Length: 138
Image (cartoon, rainbow, N blue to C red; front, side, top):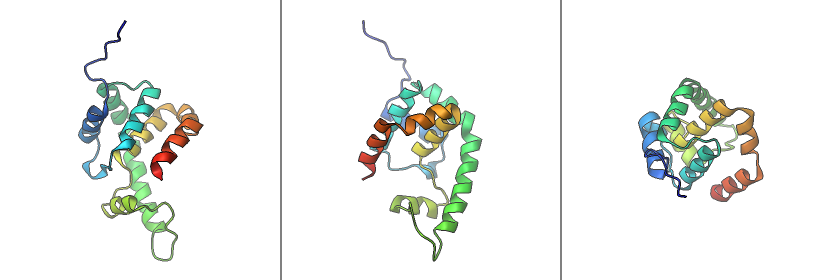
């Protein structure tokens, strides 16, 4: 028997649209494969519709926004003259110049971390997650 998906079931297009509607435009990343990976993350935690994603984002918006402000200040300090530039990719440098640090994918993953705590931590440390992310970061 075929399962009928809800009308607002997340796919790459609806994920992109929902993030653009609910997250700051200046934080848009390059998307691509990272959006497909994020869809896998969301499904792992039973976030399968645009409504569920919207609730997750809105519930943790203040925490994520505060964390980003702190990260921007921190990264500007550690990326200053005479300081190591660890973790500073060209993409990160561009966002930092705009006064932002996290991409939409990072915002949603931070919301997942806030919502699911230790379960999220175990998930991101799993071999499957690490291998998947490493393949696309090279």
